[in-house]
Amino acid sequence: MSETTESGLVRTLSKRDTLVLAFGAMIGWGWIILSGTWINEGGPLGAILAFIIGGFMVGVVAILYGELASAMPIVGGEHVYSLRALGPIGAFICTWAIIFGYVTVAAFEAVALPSAMAFLIPNFNAVELWSVAGEPVYGTWVLVGILGTVFVTALNYVGIRPAAQFQIIMTIVIAFAGAVLIAGAIGYGSPSPDPAFTAGTAGIFAVILQTPFMFVGFDVIPQSAEEADVEPRSLGLLVLAAVGMATLFYIAVIWGASRGLSGAELVDSPLPAADAMAALFDSQTIGQLMALAGIAGILTSWNAFIIGGSRALFALAESGMLPEQFAKIHPEYNTPSNAILFIGGLSVFAPLFGEQMLDWIVNAGGLGIVVAWLLVAISFLVLRYREPDMDRPYKVPGGKAIGFLGLALTVFFVYLYLPGGQSALLWPYEWLIVLLWCALGLAFYLVSEGHSEEHERAALEKIEQLQDD
Picture 1 (cartoon, rainbow, N blue to C red):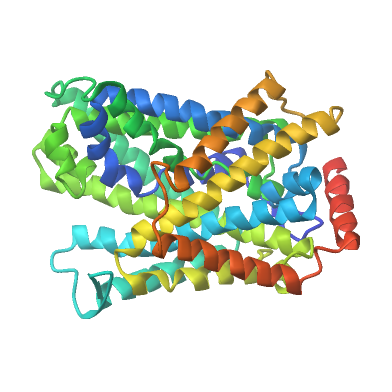
Picture 2 (picture 1 turned 30 degrees about the horizontal axis):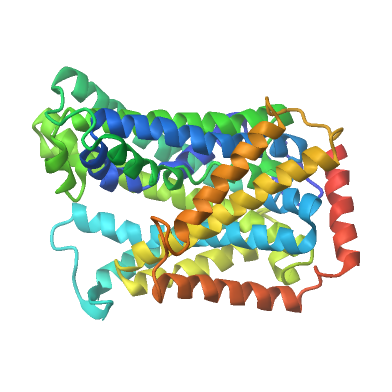
């Protein structure tokens, strides 16, 4: 029988469940629509090299998470580390930022699902309702997005075990489609007509800029650490393994697609990975398998980020930094039910804004994620200096040097989103989303009790007690 933790959650996730949860979070919808862009901009080998470099960069951040997760395998991940290192204000900023990233990914998937269905089903766009930023919003889009949100929210509401089992099934679909693509590339493909490095260093760097945000999701492991029936050291290693698996997956997709079609043909396709597979096997039907894998990727990412976001909300509320309703554990399902409903409730509005919402929310949420990464890197260094004797079942080789490298990389990631950076957010839409989220967080914080010294002491005492257990 699964163990119930002091927080009321159930320790039920195996190593396999935990690893698949994070891997599925990282391989969402992006690869199936962006693989052509990567190959066209960097060349086949240039794009692969970019993902090796990008995987290393994110791996440096992930290894810091690995040490912290092994030392403090407690629900909330970033919240726990930053509270211990930076105090309540730093912890709130860090956790609210990562929740923003998770909520925007969930909202993104609520729009990506009908977008994928539009690629698969002829004449899917029907019943035009209104337009947003010049783009029409269709009734069929809204309906599919809302139904998808209800399904994934309900799946998480009734228990983390069903959600984990669903994650495994969808990941198998993705893995099978990837294996078919590779088999086709080996059996029927030919070397790409494109230069190995299309635009030299500039092309490689253009792809590298996109890679960190293709790996978002490894941090779901620390968020759900308290529900993982895994040794602390293994928990830290699973974070790294998930990043490694995602890197290999992206490399395989790039290599396979490049042997099916040229970069120019791929970049003009709405579903380059699917069209490459269709070309390799000379069959549109087989190409549809890759499109279905893309839908499976949407669902795995969606599922994982509702898990991660709800646990972060729960941790903040337990520390008194959000209204106590978010700390409610369902008496039958042992899930943070109100936190799950909150994320699902926000996501359900995304399809009402149509396809244009895809760019706005993913860009705005990306800033939240990299800000959280930055504060985790700072927390890692603070705890290494302040608490050198803390029990760390998995300890980062190189310690402080790797910590400073992680700090430098996360500063760079944040810079990309600021004015002047290559991924700078747009005014007014994207910055308005960020400002509204900040205002909501400030309102929640001010009506809660987490900024009191009493709650800070109580939260830290609980962390230390759970860590000792």
